[in-house]
Length: 243
Ligand code: GEK
Image (tube, rainbow, N blue to C red; front, side):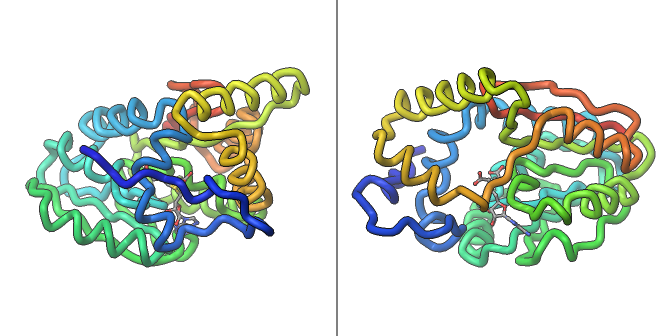
């Protein structure tokens, strides 16, 4: 499918403002995320496969920070468990409205409930699968523990959290190299140096990455028995955490 091209940062901007998930971003989001996050499509497909395996009858699968619902739709078409539903949450009205429109053209037995809310305020109950696909990185650092604790507590025994994040590295050379390779990836996807640099400025203090060790330690602290990387492409990784 052809989506409108992201050219939001293509021309020089006097003062680059903080990045927001507004109407302009929602309009180009499929193109933006595909060309910005290495391995995005592979992760989306795998979320569907994982949901197919872990979704349980009469349980709920959550997609937290669902944007336009790519992970929800991937799960929806792989879940075979009876009476399993998906709750998809995002606090961007522009994203939620577009996702609800798209859902009208998508048909599958699994019910989807899209909610425009802050994921920090959503109750997690009777969950077999929870997805945080590149969302936790936008939550203030001080709120991350509570959110993950709530998710752990809302998961059924044997439940799974899929956590995808941009990572940072303790080693300066790794940090430099992985950042440069991410920029090389973006340039290979057609973004200019100006676009890369203006987007980077916009995301400063908005997207706050942590190291894998920080994620793993916190996941264990909230109670997960195991948390490992199942996918990584430069500084973008996806983690499976098992209850
Ligand atoms: C995908 N998961 O395509 N409450 C609810 N939503 C939030 C909050 C919050 N507190 N903070 C940020 N968001 C998607 C991609 S994008 C990742 C996720 C990216 C939402 C925000 O509105 C945006 O839609 C999403 O989290 C992050 O699989 O753009 O790099």
